[in-house]
Image (cartoon, rainbow, N blue to C red; front, side):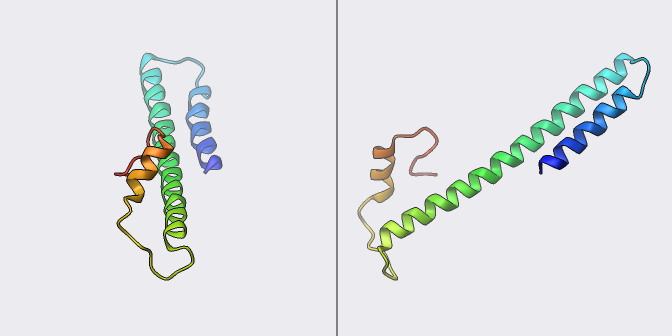
Length: 95
């Protein structure tokens, strides 16, 4: 993904640098394109990491609940207890 980001931003930069003088229209085209591409890329990266985080946390919870058994015992309010114990912004029972 880093290569894609660098390539896209380099294309925008090259388009800018290939001109000897710049108009306001050039500037007003280049700035939002750079912003939009960087923002979209950042959102994708955050979404990928959040998905990996949620999957991994889910694995931890399943391993804990099942303790090597085929099925888990439910009803101990595990997620609520975990939320209270961990007390970490962004991690709550509805996650």
